[in-house]
Length: 429
Image (cartoon, rainbow, N blue to C red; front, top):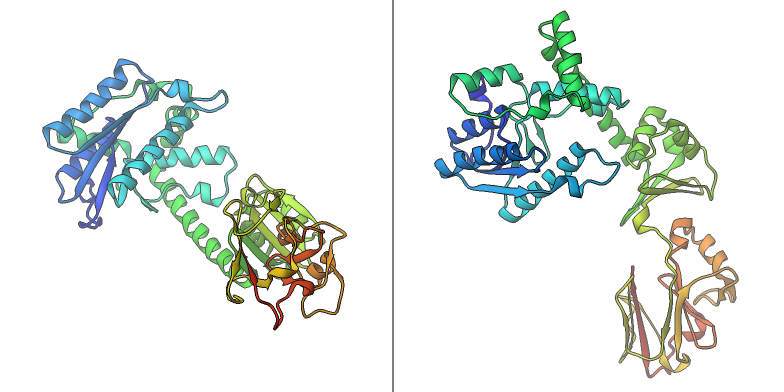
């Protein structure tokens, strides 16, 4: 493939945002787009890390866009002030850059972000991930199309791009920081890769071939993990997934491991412990909690599962609560059973209390066989440990449970043929 053909597979009807730094790769990309039929705009980020040089980079890109009537977006960051102590400056700049890109994409309805990553960048990333102990996914490298990001120059080496720029009189600016050995990427670029190129002149393309094979392997593995996920999934609620431990154990451990690694459980020994755990066991990754409950593994985002103490006093009706859940309590003319529950208003005594259930609570389930502990009721109905944490009870002024919220009314407060005033209760998590 020639560089002039690198954009040939892009859909003409889409709208593109080009990230242009002023370096040779991005200026070649800008030249190619300018000489194409595509609708595009340009974005540049000035991180103020190289003083006047940073401003000259911005000026080069802006002048090109002004001269050729191209819509230009620019944002300047005081990167050193934003950087926190332990963060790398490269990662801070990357996060700032992509946050701004996404802001523009959303605001101006761009379909794709176009970046100027090339083959050298990809091979350098391969070595960085190799040194970090990445798995197959990390070693697969960047892809030409990944979600909303397109990298048309990915198959081409930097030398090919520089030669194209020279042959077409394209102006660019060199970033002096790319020559220092202060950063890992630069050490790989200037010290490691040249050694391999001395051994084999086709080294870059050989690594590209290996990354392609690894990507195909990763895709196949991912398809197998998805099949296991479908087969083992018991149920899924908002923010919660439940899997059969038996089916996870029956599968090849590699597949179960990769399934659990999606939830942040990347240590193989931890995954073995999860798969062989007993009811009541709890595990935590950085973002997820995992419960084991009667042969079922429940996984939920930690931010959505933190136990919150609920203790609301309901002095009178109508009463409405919107956070941390929806709860309404109001008088109606007749019983409503499609959404919520209706009870006999004359049988309740205000103020009511809405709270978390606790050990020792009991009630008289409607259509039940008399008194029953809430804990026993929940166990009999196979309510998981995760779900139990969220169960609420609505109580009468004297402490009697009126409603095990979302599960069962108390028989003592049910409506009867003589009921004249109905109290409607509605709950939504």
